[in-house]
View 1 (tube, helix red, strand yellow):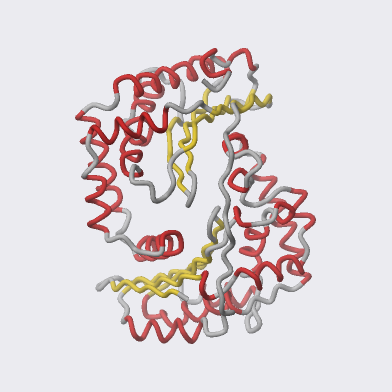
View 2 (spheres, rainbow, N blue to C red; view 1 turned 90 degrees about the vertical axis):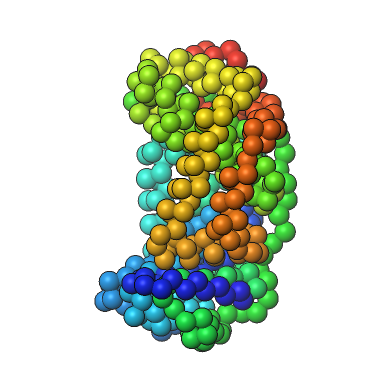
Length: 408
């Protein structure tokens, strides 16, 4: 098992996390959602603590404990006053190494997850984003919903969950990271004691590339807004143009001074939420654009997004936009590392996905080194691809501008 500590003198809190290198894309199709199911169940009790005792233990010291499931890993973490460091690490180890996984807990939590899926289905922007990913990665696990579907969640058995845990929650596929006013050797001893019973071996699975994206779809739904999601394949996590794409994304739709925000919201008042974003995985990526607008404005908003894409391809970014984007990316990155939780999550996330922790100064330098020729190159690489478009709401396919209908 990999263990990383970061000493932060003067901090009053301590954060500990265990990142397991198996996520939603690593599941068999018939068990889609089992990682998320397991994430829920680990807090339902261990061999030594009930679910209520886990909650009471963390509440008693004013801390918090939580988890989330991503496409390529599942994360468990706690944050509490630094003087309770040993308690936090012990609790996290207990949850990860000896979960009860009782039949009755599986059945009870199944209902909770089905309610979570229903809640997500009541959020039309979530539905549109999920549909976009299905079309961007058709017939591929990256396109599946992280929490699974109603059908798979209803079908997953307690034995399925126990088998998945036994096969994949292994020492070599787990990273434990701790940040706070700690001593490395003492912390390492606590982690070793807490996680000693974790099964040896590597539970990660081989991953495979996806195929081409589809052009998308128009989904008729009785909503107040039309939810527009469009984009194309992005870059792998370790691609040398990642930082250049970050810069281009900020210029296009990543900040308050971005072109999309300025043109569609500030100048025309056609949307409250409009933005673009970048997602990266070990072998693939996504560039996503979103806007929510009233049905009467949907065609105009799509035309404006298409127009801004064409301008970006034609003219690139200005020197001033480049300077603003680099300043934002470096500054926001540094500000985001001001608490122990973010520092812990950065170390764990980088180690589980790349095997190393890139120094903060090096990451800042990589963004700062982006030049105009880098932005032009990445614009050509990414925005020359056909578009995938999903529009959800009271809208007809004929309302989609001609330039977007065929995914052009």
